[in-house]
Length: 330
Ligand code: SF4
Ligand code: SF4
Image (cartoon, rainbow, N blue to C red; front, side):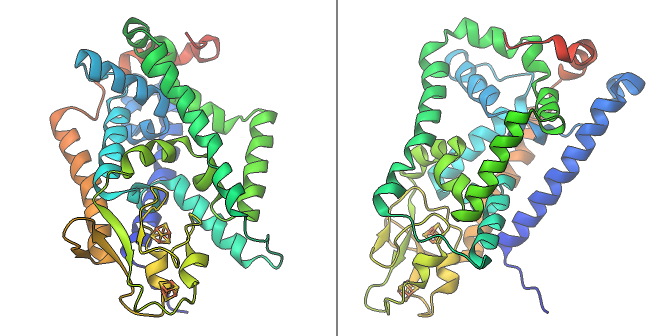
């Protein structure tokens, strides 16, 4: 059997492997800390901070209000701002090309489609109602962080012992999950097997945040109604549950530009990625190159300019990781 990957799938595999390796190295860093001291941090890749979105949101507020870049988890803020600006420019390609959780959700969706028993399609009213929880979770965090917390409290949190070891706390969360965590993960897995892409579609607050910016993106999927044979294969392929076959232009911010609809469409050229103004067509390969290149360039620049590695983290780790279990939320 010949395995033919497109650039998007190759990127997904790369980032899944990258984050698995990052996780293993991070485990090493934590466990070698008592033995190697500061040298153990060479095993900690700053990319782990992608999994600290709350800390990154707080850091974004500190940057917006005081103009100060977070020096504890600088990569977390860099990744958040890259994801937001990529949504503004290129819609949610971050979700379909780089996010490892998005890839896992997509894989579960593939399994879901191959199960012998299939759930009937979700009714449209229910589909839209199910969007509410992710916006409620996002609204809660945005309200508390942007409006509820005074800037002094934000700065105090960012420099607290708890935040300096929040990455290690996250590792503990995954390595020694509570029974509640296991129950929640089991329910999410089951839901993802029943409904394609359940987590990304209906629950991910990070995706909901990107949606707020993706609505302004100049890119869209366009359907040439005259060339369309109304086979509706695009509708059944869409992981976001978008009704492509009845639209001329896909304006939904839920579109992750995963290109699945373009791949399955039997009428060549009927669906295309276009700019809203001028109607310029972007080939799927070029779109993938743009979104991956945007992140690679952003991360490269952040590394060169000191917005990636923390100069302070090693000293905080030495002091606070041994006290991990006694450090509570400030
Ligand atoms: S509309 Fe097409 S590109 Fe957008 S999420 Fe659905 S299948 Fe992917
Ligand atoms: S898959 Fe292509 S031809 Fe079929 S309904 Fe969608 S756009 Fe039309």
